[in-house]
Image (cartoon, rainbow, N blue to C red; front, side):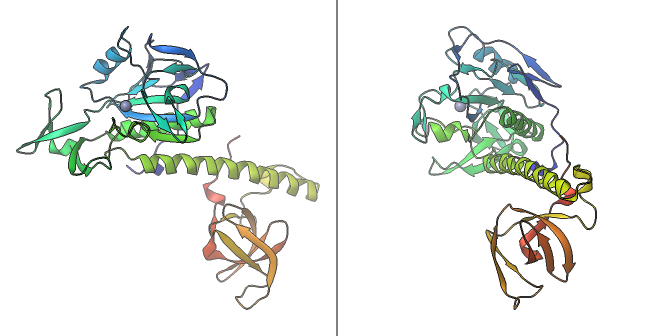
Length: 315
Ligand SMILES: [Zn+2]
């Protein structure tokens, strides 16, 4: 399932507790207390290497097991929260990333119910370390970057990945999350989770795209305000967007030339536009668009994306 086709997020974080459908809480005693201010700023994704959601929750909430996590996501999409998100969980172990060690102090841990790496047994069957057999339809063959040969990995379910994305979005909206990593990236000598069956790059891209979209919203709000003030009629964004003349685009090229007229031979304006900048489209001629930013000029439309229709404009 492409991450972009995910349903809208119905999860919410209130008072460090996740609220939503199929979410439950079972307290773990395994915590070192409250995070320092400015933490958490990192999300660490794991597989449980376990046989079921329940068995993993049991271990992670057992006194003296020495392990815990903030969330465990089942293969049916159920989410069990084990610690409030303002408390330190024990999921990272000995770990280091980007100049810091002991990542538990900075991170939210999300465990996904998954059997982990499997052994091929012939006849399309694969066995977990705890002796359960899995059909090849539930297996991904891929070489882990830490390993030298092809491995076999228990597939994540679509709903499990969708819930992981939703949960990360909620966490990113709530905390200044700068880093989303797999356990294998912060403890590369010991760990291979969440492994090559987990779409880590797609998750990061999806979260970055969402952050970028939110930034665009606030910039368009600002533009709308300025626009409203100039016109001295309505300051509302409805007045600004997105009727046919008032279409909005963002720059997709790293640097985009602006010209005085709609042609390659027309002289350049001083301004160069940069990726992500938001423009109002004033007029179109062929593959050229007259755009307004602090000035007005013409740009080639292959280097801008019309975003008027993609913006939901929720407050
Ligand atoms: Zn792990």
